[in-house]
View 1 (tube, rainbow over the protein chains, first blue to last red):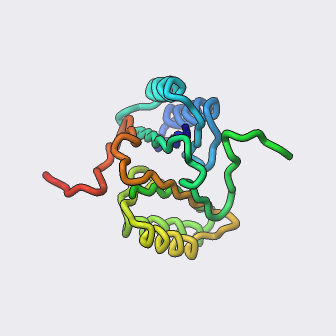
View 2 (view 1 turned 180 degrees about the vertical axis):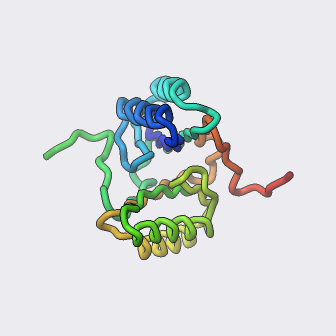
Length: 96
Length: 96
């Protein structure tokens, strides 16, 4: 299924900047970055749980926010992009 | 239906900062801000089309990115939040 992960990490401190980098790096293991703080991941429910656990361990729950949106398997028609940086399709091979 | 609007607006210029403010202000007419660049909107297809048109007129398509994710009507179980700033339910009255 397609899961959208969005996050706000407070980066006013050095530790915050480090958390932001770690969150992005962890998300990169599961999907592709479509905007600065938005990742699209094709995962099953086990992978999603692992991702949630990993991210929960990184963030500071007092200042940082994480949201997960499950868009299911038939997500082709549910996503619309306008403007710069059109996204790659995360569940299809890259063909150049 | 619940529609998630996410955006990246390049704010390296004054006009970019203005676009960012205008995008946020327009989204506020349709939903609630759950993260810095993420809005959850309860809209019908006509309202969604109006929002898309309005935002498309604000952004610079060369530098700014807009994404719309349609999560349908049964969205209660599709959204998970971790950490700070738990979201209000956008389609229910506020009770204090």
